[in-house]
Amino acid sequence: MTPDALADIHAACFPARPWSAEELAALASETGAVLESTSIGFALARVTLDEAELLTIAVLPEAQGRGTGRSLLAALAARLTDKNVAQLFLEVAEDNAPARALYAQAGFEEVGRRRGYYARPQSAAVDALVLRRRLRAP
Image 1 (cartoon, one colour):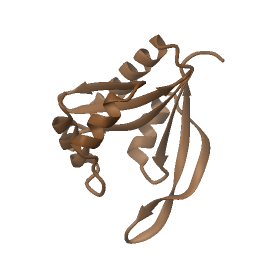
Image 2 (cartoon, one colour):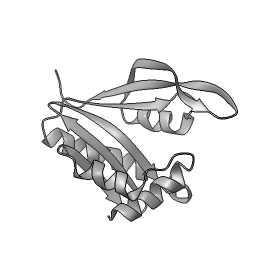
Image 3 (cartoon, rainbow, N blue to C red):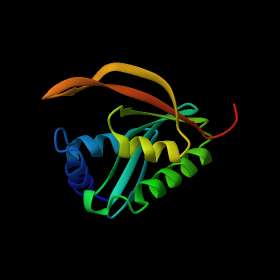
Image 4 (spheres, one colour):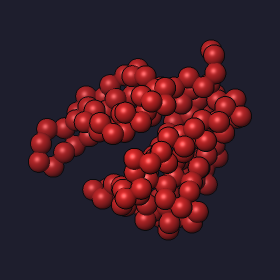
């Protein structure tokens, strides 16, 4: 998938602060980057030693709720496991119920919190939940 296509999907999902094609290209080309994509969504992670961080996951709004996010996470986890990654981390806004449900279903658990991390223009800032999924036994 091209950086422009990734940016279009990201913009549809995150209109307040979409990542540009240049930003996504730079992230995807970094050492340790792992990208899973389909025509309607993508997941991008970065591996450091035996840990990975999910940088973003995006599925076109009109295609959400059909299992694409779940499939992307599963494919990403399989690739990370093949790379001998022990655990995958991510941050999610506490008020993002659909994403939290997806991550819970995928086996993530809360391991930390960043208070007031996500600014909200018309309301108080929202905590970021730090989630982890073990990909192999410690």
